[in-house]
Image (cartoon, rainbow, N blue to C red; front, top):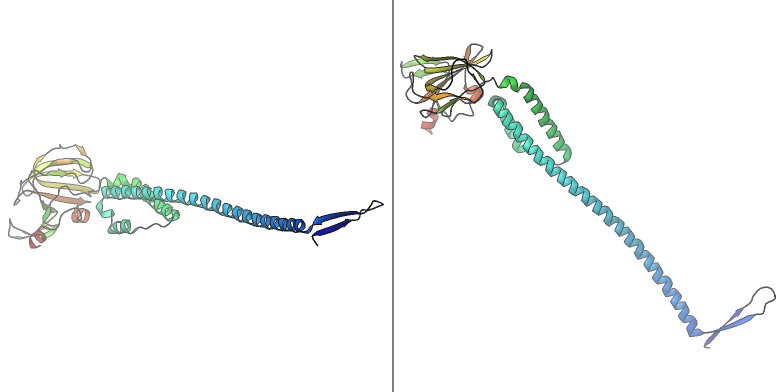
Length: 282
């Protein structure tokens, strides 16, 4: 049997119709329909999967863009943090080494930041520190906090052996050995109130910084200021020499607080080189 006969029975009084189709043609049509449905189904599934992948790719691209922006913002904030921190550190050094503690040094090397929030917290902390420093800087500029000259300590503050008297003498300041003619700087801002030659200190300059602080600089070979001059912290006031009782080029440096001498090393210890006697014993 090579043909299939299909009987079509219409409604009402119409005649019955007979349709004869070749069996192979019929099977071919069925196969084509099945294949069409199969390919349509596969196409729909693939299209749905592709659409899903496209959506995921778009989401990943958006996330990647956000992460790049986050990374860029993090790097900018990290750089800003580093710059601000160094500004703050240098500012505190200018205000006075005795308020720039070793704790700040350790913190500066141990800081690690993992997210923007930690950076923001540190930046806020630095901003607060800077604000506080600005409020107090007017007072600190009158605090003798920088070394007047570079060198090594020959005679410390307090009871020391005096080679000129061969007995123990109380020293109200320190004597720092330095090169002849080295520039001597004002340890803080203030007014020159005295320039005189003293038996022990030789040519000496006294600066009144505030109602609390005054400083004395002795053994000078010459001065570059006059009585009544106002100097800023770090201004050159003279040159070191060998005037007065000294065994070589040096500077006698004294700090008075409320009229009483205090140990200058409390203020400038880490700026000066190691102790003179330790230098020879090293």
